[in-house]
Image (cartoon, rainbow, N blue to C red):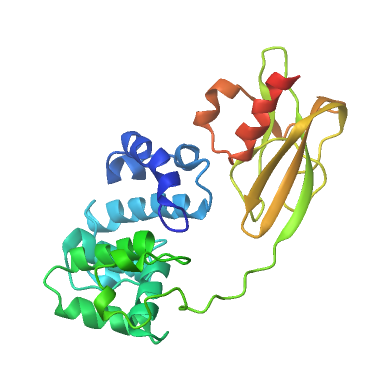
Length: 287
């Protein structure tokens, strides 16, 4: 959950996710929809699919016990060099290096250059007595002290050994170009208060339940033929480099469809959905 997502966001989901899937066996026996529903709002949904796929693989190939051998870990779905190192060092206290954005930044500033961070991480972990403590400490320094901007150098435990004591390194990479988009969303309800939604299969936010929408390349479902009654409001949402403004309309159907489903908003936790859906549904009370 913490990959590409900040701690304060993750804390809202972590305990509930573990309550729902307390063991590897529970996660492996779940459906993709159940996992995606518990993950809804965290974004980068491929992580949730890979987590479930990894649990299934561990149950089938390793008898339900997470392996600590590097090659075995790398054979699991969604596990790369960083994740394998984190598992080996933190779970098993093995001398395995890890490098994420925080650790790379700490190394760049402490050593005064941007040389191979993985080589430096390997050299440090080979000499330490507690790989678990070292790697978690490096990540914490990067997350809480050696921050991208305005680092708290006076509080840093490695200040005396730091070559820069500043935010001059690493050199910032050019930001990816962002794209502004405007998409019409349609809130269509029946007499029971249920909302019409569609499960998308496009490149972004796939396998999630979405509100019917206007013509767009972001959401792939065929647009419905609807009659717009009124604009309820606008909500904003970000997906990778896309900055989306959803215009939310109250609408009625003018043609029927078999590709959509009526969903009770009170049971939205049972289906996977992106966070913009709740923002849009909150506008219903403004009618």
